[in-house]
Image (spheres, each protein chain N blue to C red):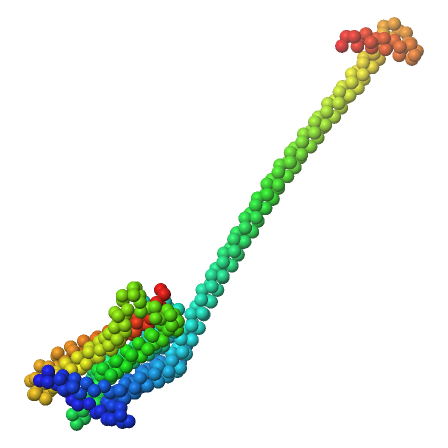
Length: 174
Length: 237
């Protein structure tokens, strides 16, 4: 049955239907034109537009990334510079403080030495003065004692020269 | 199937009315699909039918790219896309049902008619030879028949006919055979209730397989079309 049916079809198809072929070609060409004109061309242009936009986005992102990287580098460099400057300031301040302290200590030492010298000098002077006064007193007393012994009053001039002589003798005793 | 065809003769040319009808139906469906998918185009994120159509375009680009230089192939993008969509829809048309009016088969796949498939194959042949002439000039075009050696001249000439014939007949054979078997299985319904139930399972299996075959054959047809065109247009490569 199958063979008979296929045979029937083959016999019917033996004569070429040129009209069908021409019509098919015309239909296909019309479809090709309409599809291109109304569907595929707009679709393709949209796809191209999207491709371009994505490309732009990618290049833009790349550009932004580079800018951000540069900004970061710049900020880091600035931070480093500021840190170094702060360090330098700190070192300078420390040095200055040390110098100042040294100077103050030096000044204090000088002052104390001066005061000590002055005090020593004053003491020396006082001692001289006291010794001189004591000598005078001793001389005077010696004269008085001698007067009493000799019962003779000497004039002031003689007394003084005598006293000085006695004083020298006493001074030799020192 | 074994039914007659509504053939009329007009101005000395034979016209198969059912094939012509199905041509128009297939073309109309393709156009409606493509047209509805490109109504609200966006260059943002594509959705729905636009996404499907963009996938088809990329798919066809892949086919072209595997056959020839993509820059040259961009010229054939619309032809290949139209061929793919038209043949795919045409192959699917005969699957759900057939309409037979007074023993004449009206609803079928247009690609189950060798006139349709051979017409498309011949159109591809013409495009291929035109491209060969345009890309390589008359001298380059003629020299392509003597490649790789002068002795290949007869083979190269025969190839032009055999390629086109097999190109068209392969598609026709696959689709026609599918419809014959579908028709046979469907005839079981006439025999009786039991036969109908018995035939239901293989019928569905065969329909599924026919969908697969129809898809593959539309891909194969476009692939071969691009290969033939590349063969003519890229002789120097």
